Image 1 (cartoon, rainbow, N blue to C red):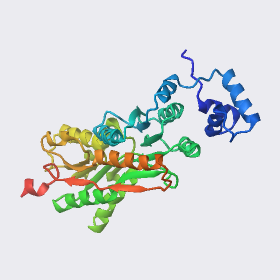
Image 2 (tube, rainbow, N blue to C red; image 1 turned 135 degrees about the vertical axis):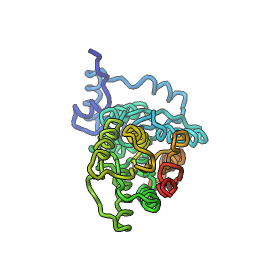
Image 3 (cartoon, rainbow, N blue to C red; image 1 turned 180 degrees about the vertical axis):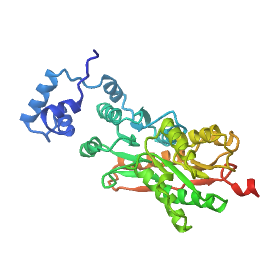
Image 4 (cartoon, rainbow, N blue to C red; image 1 turned 60 degrees about the vertical axis):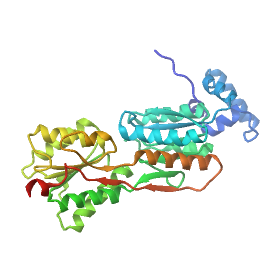
Length: 341
C-alpha cells in the first residue's frame, strides 16, 4: 500500500489545533508558545513530516505562484476560466498551478492542502458539486491566505467572489423561448445547494411567473452534473404523457447530452423541442441546428477572479462580489416560430 504523506492538516488534527498554528510552530514563530512549538515539532519528527521539497526549491527562486482549483478541467468553461486567470496572472509575473477536483470534495480538500504546503501566495477556487462542508476554506481564511471564489461560491462574508448574472440570463433565455412559441419549458440543472444552480433556476421560474405560465415541478430536474443524469432526465421528460416543448440546460455537459437525447428520440430541434444551453464553447456553432446559448464569458470571469486575488495579495482586505454579465446568443435551436411559421 502507498504510504500516506504527512501533511500540515494531519499534524493539526492529531494535536487538535488549527493548520495555522502548526504552520507557525514549524516556522518558529513568536506567535506560538514554546510549549506548543515543541509539541508540534516533536510530532512532526515522529510522523516523518517533510516540507514539500518542490515548494522549498521554488521559494529559493522567489517565484510568485497562485493555485487554482476547478471541478472539471476538460470542459470548455473551466479551461476558458483558467486561460483568463493565466493571462492576467502573467501580466503580474505570476505562475499558475491548477488542480482538478473531478467534482469530488475529498480531492478538493487535498488540492487545498497541497497548495498550503507549497506556500502559494493565493488561491482561486470553484466548489466541487458535492462540497457542503466549507471548513477547509475557513482554515485558509484563518491562515491569512488570500482566496477568491468563482462561479460556485460560498462564505461571502470571508472571501471575494466572481459570479455571473445567472438569474437574469436564465430569465432572458426562458422569455425568448416563450416569445418564440414554447410553453412547456423544462429546466435541467445541477445540485440544488449550489448557488449557481439556485440563481439560474430562479430566473427560469421568474419568467414563467411573469408570463402566467403554471409551474410544473415535474419539468424541473436538478441533481448530479453528469452525462448520465442529463440523459436520464431528458428521457424521463420526453416520455411524459405531456412532454416539454423546450428545455433550458444548466451547463455544456447537460446541454449536449440533451441535444443528443432529443435527436435520439427522433424529435426535431426546435420544432418538437426547442433547446437553449449555458455554454461558452465554439462547438455550439458547429452542430445542426446551431445551438442558441447563454454565453458564460468564462475567460472574463477568470480575469476578474485573478484581478481580485491580486488585490488581496497586495493587502486589500475588502470583500468584493464581481458580477460578469452573460450574453444570450440566439441561433437556430430555440425559435419555433421560424419553423412553424
